[in-house]
Length: 340
Image 1 (cartoon, one colour):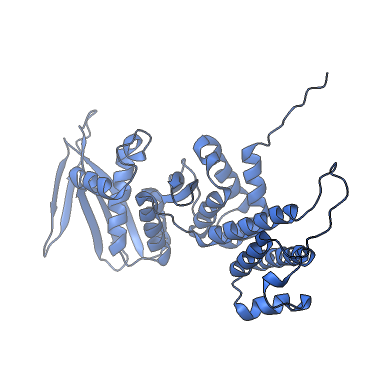
Image 2 (cartoon, rainbow, N blue to C red):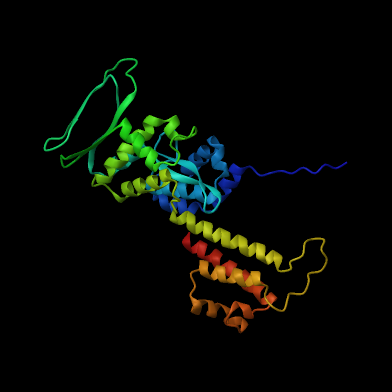
C-alpha cells in the first residue's frame, strides 16, 4: 500500500529564498558598511530563535533587514543594536515584524555621526548617590554604591558629549519611564513584553531616545528614533521597500491566481475550454488593480489596451484579458527588476 507523504518546506528556508531573491536591495542598502551574507545570516538566526517571527510576513522581515542595513546595524540580540519584534496588524489581519532599535544601537549611531566625543547611558540604583541639577548650570552627579545588592533601579539617564564642547543629557525616574511606557507602548504589562523581561534595557532606550531627539545628530539617528516610536506604539511602520515588494508580490499572486481561473485546465481535466467571449469581471478588476499598482493614469491604461482595439478593460474578450494579464505581469516583473 502506498502512503502519501506531505513534505512541508522549512519556513526558514522559504524566508531565505525570499531574501536571496531580493538580495540586491539589501546590498544597495548596506552601501559597503557590512558584509551582505553575514547580515542575512544574522537575520535568519534571529528568526530561528523566535518562532513567532516565523509567523510574520516575509515582506515585513525583509523590511526590517533593509532598514537595519541602511543604518549599518545588525539584527542581533548579541550586539543589542536592533531587533525584530512581532506585532499584530489588525488592519490587514497579519502578524508583521517591526524594526526596533536598542539603546546600544542609538549609542552606536551617535558615535558614527562624527559629532560626538562620548556617549553613556546609566542605571541608578537605590543605594547609589545620585543628584541632578537643571537651570543655568546643569549637571549629573552619580556615584554607584558598588555593593552586591544595590537595590532596585530608581533612575535612568543618557549623556551625549559633543566635540564642540557642549553636553546634552536627559534623566527619567522609574515612575516617569513607567508612565511613558503605559501611555505609548501597547505591550507594556504583558508577560512576553520586553518591558517585563528586560525592563532596564527598555528604560535606557526610552531615555536615550528622548535625549537623541534634541541632539544635533544625523538623519539616521532621527529615522531610528521615529521608527522605534512607531513600533512601540504598535503603528505599522510602512517601511517603503517592504511595502513596495508586498504590493508587487500581492499583485503578481492575484494575476497568477486569476490566470488559473480563466480556464487553464489541470492535468486530468481534458481539453482546454474555449475562452469566454467577454472578459470575466475578475479579469477586469485585476487589470484595473494592476494598472493602479503600476501608477498608470487613464491615458497610460488606454495606451496599454490599444493593441486590442478597445479603450476600457470591459471591452476585452476572455482570451484578450488573459493575454493582457500576462503582459501586465511581465511589466510588473520588469518594474521590480528596474527597482533592483
